[in-house]
Length: 249
Length: 249
Figure 1 (tube, each protein chain N blue to C red):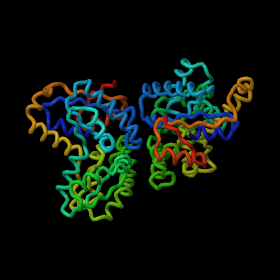
Figure 2 (figure 1 turned 180 degrees about the horizontal axis):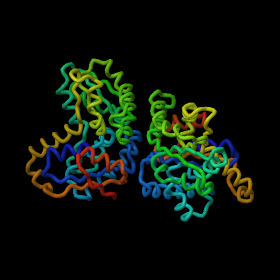
Figure 3 (figure 1 turned 180 degrees about the vertical axis):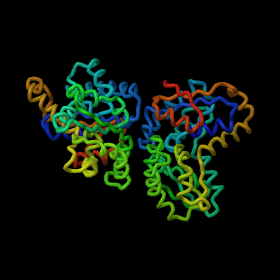
Figure 4 (figure 1 turned 45 degrees about the horizontal axis):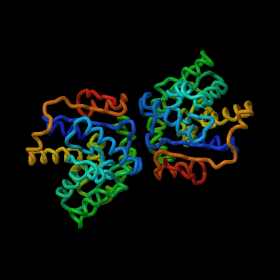
């Protein structure tokens, strides 16, 4: 949803077809095999509902399923990792980059690989933060317990001389202020993968205007979910700043 | 798994066929419709693999799907709520019972209903504790953050004059010591739904020995899961006190 929100802000004319697999979230604690199966199903659903461009708007799915989706589908496929990696590499002054994400994302070592491809001499420091997703989904954005758990997760990264930290999970932008405060406002630049992904898509559409013109415009956005809970409705309203009509399919 | 462990301890001669739907957990934060669909699928799976008795070993599933499963299937169906309710009603001296559980379980008000059926004059005080499942699944059993979150959840219940507290989620027995300590060792009796369910099944099989004799015995127990992660393997080993061979299906 944070990615959809960023796309809506940067590309307001294009139709968004969103699918949130809430019946099977969180992906971050599941096996690569399960995440790959679900990602293929979800992509098929979006294509059947008219999508012409796919964004894998989940770091856990992007980290294990991007290559397989690109082999299986011919539409342009964007994901949330490469844009954040590029921005992090462009941002760091000292070549020390931190990554926080779910267990699935951190275990995949995808950020390490992609950063090393662009800048082999850089150092990457990763930290899995598996409880942040449930805390965000509970709405405990400002809770003292969330601050304590964040302190515990971020403390090993604070020891390292990093100047750039990638929010490697699309839930984390909701904790951006807390994370920035904890890491030091002037010391660390945070990279928000949701915003970087929307910027990358915008650049692609600007550079490929023939393709861009074939896309649906000025049509109502659709927000499909595989399960609809009060917590999801509340979180959507918080992210978008207005009520969002989630349609259970 | 805590229920399977209790059944194994009390009824060691019978074959257990376990199915953990780890690909779609946690159920406690999902909608009743999703939980019902999954419970029907899971029951079919167990029957196809030879089960002759079903235990709905999850309070969230039991709270919304028990009646529908009993309508759809003819085998004896046990669940984790009624045995705990019966024991709580028998245990309380002052008629004030506390319930902790997931959001789905507490919202269903199933404990309130079932307690009122047995003892209309009793008072029930409920508290949803949605973060306890992810904390347990992370293995943060003794973490300071878990203690803080438990204190926050239990503090409203401590205000009430309860003398009995039902652990209304099969994850919570792993936090039993912390909960007992927090609520006061001599003030509050904890009811463990896993143990009560196994006791109820044992009583049923003792009283229906003709049926009991038709069941498979002395056969190796089967532990099927819909997703296999390191965390699940570790939790299984912790609950059973030995490695458990989880078979991904």
